[in-house]
Image 1 (cartoon, rainbow, N blue to C red):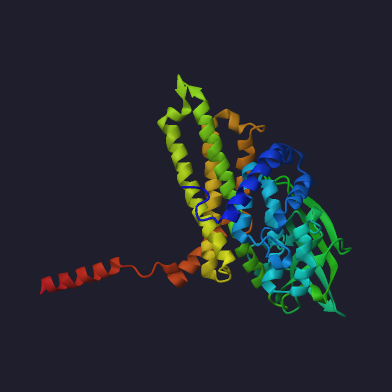
Image 2: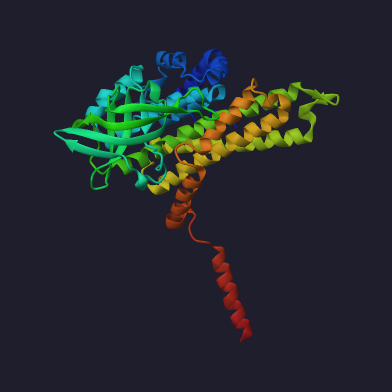
Length: 406
């Protein structure tokens, strides 16, 4: 199936534009970004110059109006060259969705134009030492006095936070209700603690921060008091297609590399591609990549159609991300197996692709947490599957046996 099936002309043009940028600028930088473990300012500036930060947003805000599907296509292509670079675009969406979900026009007008032109960058500060998926265990507190909120606590694994101009953060009031806040940086009450080094996505710093009476004005409350949990949940729903796109791009690159390598590499007098075992690997990768693309694009269209707020919506979005993460890891693993010992070496792109892909099974909800949400939705709504028809057959058989006994 054509990779561009079901995309309009604008999205097709966007794909080719991004692909050319990735080939010329992003892919050649991927190894250095991984090794240097520094935020790639040159890539950020490149994306800004090319207008990539405008893709998601409507024209009324100065955007390109290509929506989540457009950003999905861009993330997919960039992830083929460098997952850390793709994460830059994902963060630009994650840190603006809360404002759009709450429909806070003052904050939207203050922040999103700056995100689009590259003058503002945000970070999403939700996770705490003892609170991640279970938001009820959050301990960060917010108190208001004379029109100013004072926020105290600790936030962990805040991606891209060393270059952020603002935090989207969450805290509970004295009654235990969680709220969402925009906090401008620098802020004397926000203190850098440490950078956490992960096995992948090394170009995006993940850092821990202490909030010691960090201040933000009352007008920087996102939504109303007590709406923070819902804002966080829906924001994470909206971001799942982009994470799925990152996995899709990674898997596509693993498949493309494996195909090329198998056609060129000779063994026992013939190419690897002639070996049935290799053909089975390639076929399995192609099947999963095709399925991932369908799930990812459909999930993106759901968000563009405002179908991302209910738990049943979330189930389909989470399925896309779960399947994509699995596909990305398995494809990198198969590609490494096809390439033999070369793919395991640090200088080889597959080694980096494998490490970066593993991040997806943890970020914005672990597989297990997302699967529980899918299961709950299935049990409560049936997700369109409906009742079992086989039960009717069993009931009729029982009635027949009773008649026969008589």
